[in-house]
Length: 309
Image (tube, rainbow, N blue to C red):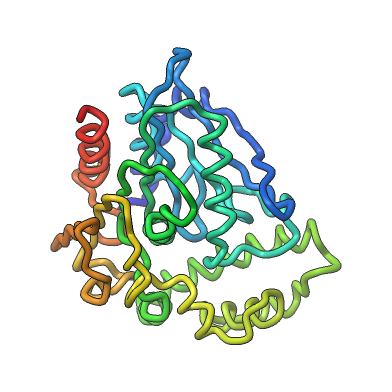
C-alpha cells in the first residue's frame, strides 16, 4: 500500500513545490568519490536547522516514503538535504566501483561536505531501512569523526544484516523477485557506463538475492566472504557501544523484511531509545492513503522538540 499508485499520486502532489525547489549538487569527496545530494535551502540568509534524510537500499532521494516528510520539514523552516548513495538515484555513472553497505566512510565524508556548504545551527539525521542503519553507525562514530549531530531518527533499520538477508529470501517470492529486478536494473546501467569492468551476462544469471550478493562481493569488491561483509555493516553486538548521539529507533513487529527481535541484540545505551510498534510494516506506518504517515509525524516531533530546546 505504501508503494501503490494511489500513494505515489499523493506523495508527488504533496511534494511538487518542494521538488521544484530542489537543487542537485555533486559532492566530490575523498578518493575521488562523487555522490549526489539534493538541497532545499531556506531563502533567508541566517542559519537554519538542517535535516539530512537517508533512503533505503535500492531506493533514492526521491523515494515515495521520504518525499512528504522532506516537503513538510522544508515548509516548517528547516533546510533539507537528501543524499543518494553511489549507484542510487540514477548516479551509476559517477563512480566506477559498486555500492555496498559497508561504504560508511564516504557517507561520513558527504556529511562533512554538506555541513560545510549549508550554514546551520542544529543538525539531524533521519534514515529509513538501510539509511537507518547508516544513521546509527554514523552516530556510533560521531565522536571519533568529530561530527556534531543533535539527534538521529532511525526507521526500520537493518540490524543483523545476515538475518535481514535471510528474511528477504523467506518472504513472498513476488517481493524478493522485485528487489532482484531493481538490483539488476541498476547493474545494467552500471555496465552501460563501465562495460570493461562488469560482466553483465553473468550478473543476469544470478537468480536470488543471496547469489547476487555473493557474486558481486567476491568478483568486484575487497571482501573474500559474504559473512565478513554482512558482519561489517550489522549494528548488533558491540557496534553501538560508542553511540554518542540521542537516537530514536522505530521497529515494527510486522516488518516483513527486518526481524523485529534483532533489537534485543543492540547494545543498551542511554543514547538509544527503542520504539517497538505492533504494526507499521517496513517503513510503512500508514495512517491513510492521502495524508502524512504516522512515522513522519514522529520524526518531525523529535526534530522540532530538540530545535526548540
